[in-house]
Structures are given as structure tokens and as C-alpha cells.
Amino acid sequence: MRSISNAVYTIDNNMNPNQIIDQSVAKFKQVTDHFEEELKKQRTGRAHPSMLDGLMAEAYGAPMPLNQLATISAPDSQSLQISPFDPNNLQAIVNAIRNNPSLGLNPTDDGRLIRVPIPPLNEERRREIVKVVSQKQEECNVSLRNVRHETKDSLNASKKNKQIGEDDFKRLEKLIDDALNKARAVAERAAGAKEQELMTV
Image: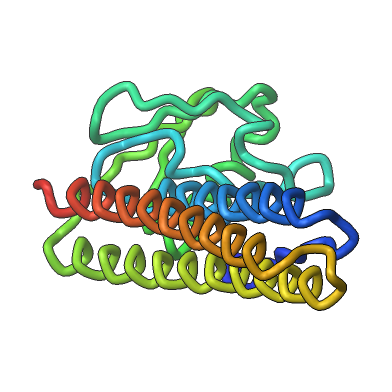
């Protein structure tokens, strides 16, 4: 899985300072959106179709996302049901789920439908996943700081090139710090909600 902190968020230096701020705010959102998507993949002991987001299965000679090969539903809180669009892909889907060590799931099928029982998480596993959430939150914060750092470099270049004066520089710098704090708060709320979900038995 691609680490969020390895994602490259470059700022285009040919823009005017206000455009630089707009682009940075968009990049902050990109980082927090990615973080929220990563959180969805962390299992909580309750069945949810998004648990299988990003899972690939070998079909028609190439790896394909599971949601392009089947409909995934959660008929109750302890199981998932998968209906392949093409029955020929049933075994490939079963194998993709079974062979994914991070899921730890054991699907069964009746030749038409796949059922995936979701075992309840024990205390130790819950704590492990909380640690993963914290780690991903730290990666998110690193990416947010990287965006701010690149933005400030661009603003410094604009100041040096006399595109903006000291007052504008300070105003824009405050805007970017405010945007960073808002993005951090979004990530913090998402992580807190996930943690609460994980520790609620």
C-alpha cells in the first residue's frame, strides 16, 4: 500500500501568490481525503463493503478492482456478501480475499454467491489497528507539513522577485497556517472517530 507521506505534492511556482494559496488548500484537502480513504480500509469488526476497497482480483488475464467484478453488500454486521457479475470470476475473487494477509478473512461460496464472515476483533487486534491509525495520522501530518513547506518556499520566491511585499507575505503566510490547522483538525477528527469505532465492542 502506498504510504501517503511518499505522495508528491508539488507547487507550481509560475502562479501568482493567491493561486499558490488556492493550490495549497486543494493539496491539503487531497492529503486529508487520502487519509480518510486509508482509514476506511482499517477493519473494525463490523462488516462494511469498504473493507474490500482497493482489493484486486485476477480476471480476464489482468488484476482488476473487486468492485468492478462484483457487487459487495453487508446483509448484517457480521458478514459480507459478494455477487460476481461473471460467475467465471468467482474463484479468483475468493482467492484474492483469502490470500490477503491484512484482511485475515475466510470466504465461502456456493458456486454463485460468496459469503465472508467477519470475525469479531479481540482486544489485542483492536489495539494493533489503533496503532496503525496513529501511524497513518502521523504520515498525514508529515504530508501536510510538506505542502506548507513548499508553499512557503514559493511565497519566499515571490517576495524575493518583488511580486509581493512583506505585508502581503505575512498575510499569505497566515492564510496557509490557518489552512494547515484546519486540515490537521479534519485528520484528527477522522482518526478519533475511527479509534472510537475500533474500541467500541
